View (cartoon, rainbow over the protein chains, first blue to last red):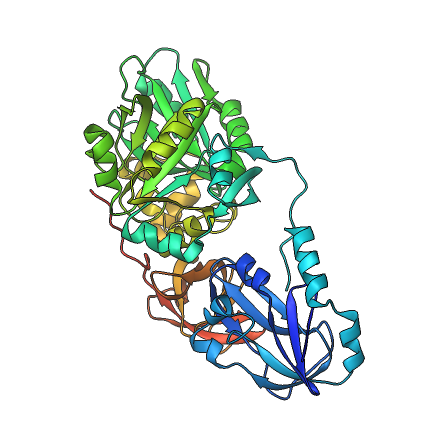
Length: 124
Length: 382
């Protein structure tokens, strides 16, 4: 199991040929109270960098981008009723979607946990 | 995730800047100032605290100024201002405050403002104005250029302004100044709070009972901390200020009102008193008198989306069969409503409460209904 991050604060936790995508703890803190999450439909094909989901706080809407290319195989529909889970447990129950990777080598271009934490330190 | 870009312009600080930083506020650029958008507990908690207890807001970025008649006559000052705004300023009682708008020649809104007839002895012929931070330079230039001989505008950049809002506000202020706490809604008084000179008015921008308190910039930190020392009071940032005013159905300048909207389209008829409607004598009077009589072709409405998705400013409004009828001017999530709320402008024919509309959010039409405003009942002490 490997977790990688983007500079846009998405994470992907890879298990086998699929990965769970969500937003980092830093990102949920920056957003503030999440009040709505719009998820893609299962089966949708995403290219790396495509808009994968939308997360809305009281103040604003933000896009969540696909950290890698692939097909959406599952979404966390619990977020529709309890979007605040993104704040409470971003790395766990607050995940957004599961994507089957079409090009696993894209992971090499993402940040490791350590690199991401360094990056967060540099911008906060 | 996409982040909002920040402006590179040099920012001004309010006299309470150090307090916000010490409280752990997230500071953002707003109207040329470094302002607290939220404190560590977040917008939702701050919003709810204000509805249930009392919130303290730093609004020192707003423009405070006096319009002063050399002949010390209220009539002279009032007539000078009435040439620019549609409110009845002449009949203000000493210490009474009114909401109004600076209008352009077409009856479009240049800014909205609060006007108070100063009641303190020795200040006869003084009007106290509070204008929006983002508009103050334009407003002052606009007013200055149109004042008659013998009336001058004195901007007071050395004043701070804070708002204490919420159901506990009166009890909190009452402990410090019983006299201030008893001021009726839309009235004001000059009082001492903890030895500090303050101009207090019973007004605000949240729909709750509360006060706006002006003091000298040098006294702001002491007053702020005196108010914050009460366990009923917590600091509230601009984020919750926006969700509170949206639930209260109050307009935000530059969003819900601007030069393309008239006060009648905006549903601000109540702020134009009978004498002014009849007599006119303000910019754009002909249009406004016609709209009062015949109704405006488009009007500001409240909107309740039926789902959970917020519809933000700029969202296109259509009829259920797809005819474009308007646009959202403010929209977001209402913590007290516990759901999305919005306001915007639509053609008059689809403005009745309960009318079915669609909001086009990210390309998808989402069902919504025209709703009565305020979304949360006002709790002013009239």
